Length: 422
Image (cartoon, rainbow, N blue to C red; front, side, top):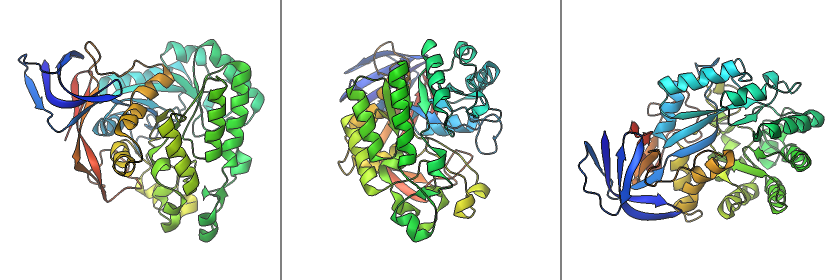
């Protein structure tokens, strides 16, 4: 089947130009100023933008084990609605994705039923217990793209060093959830003025920073490639900038919520503002935005973490950490950063597409002749409503619930197939 997209403003090599784009089966057959070849489907993309499909390096699909929160079908459908054509699934499933059988289950289910591509991230340690190295060799044969104990952090420095040495043998990046448990304690939000005012225990930035410092030194010693997940503090940015200056293989990501919200969002005791690491000070937030703008922070990842209402609608201390992000990421970032002129649209799209692909060595999602037809269309003049009954995710735990945001993904193609149209 041929699909012709006419008159779109197409993102190519960091720039926007008006082009026609012809898709045949799974690939882009041609991209040019004008294409007049007959096609079974013609989409008029006048006044719309055509982006490469977004890539999310950090998501939780909850499948297997907690499919009442999300599963591969609902999660990838929500991702497609948000413009994502590839998502990376973290291993904190039940049972933990720490062996080849678990990896193959996710791959098979995603291939058969998914609305986007799912890349599997295997566990760093067995059962994510931080005691023994997981079966990286067999999982690599099964197709994992990285290893991580995300949601947990290896506390033993010697074990972490051995994990890095082992991962180097299989060219596997390690994605790090940086949290010193003793320093974080039973903290609920950022250790600052809001925590004091609300009477909640705080998580200090140093709980993140001390692990990042340790793992940068270990990576320098072992020559490992490490990727720091969901960065939240200004000091963390400073350490990563220094590591990059010294030529170490260190990359990092930031979430939409850490880019646009700060600790003040927690004043209402809304548990949809409870995540780990927590929303930090306004100074930290501004530092993260500047680091994304100048390239110190490589990419944006949602950390899509679904929880059901009965789990979130509890006392703040007892509610789980995490928020969903697939369906809101683009609209939030466009509304809060691009429209006010804080971040360019070009840098936003780079951080959602080319940069995450580069971090994990995935195929570059460039829109060019012969490339895989993974792309999305956006209407920047339309609004995206964020209401419980409009979200496709099984869970509705979003800090932007009941809002309408500017910018809407109107159509998503994955492997040349329409996976979302709204």
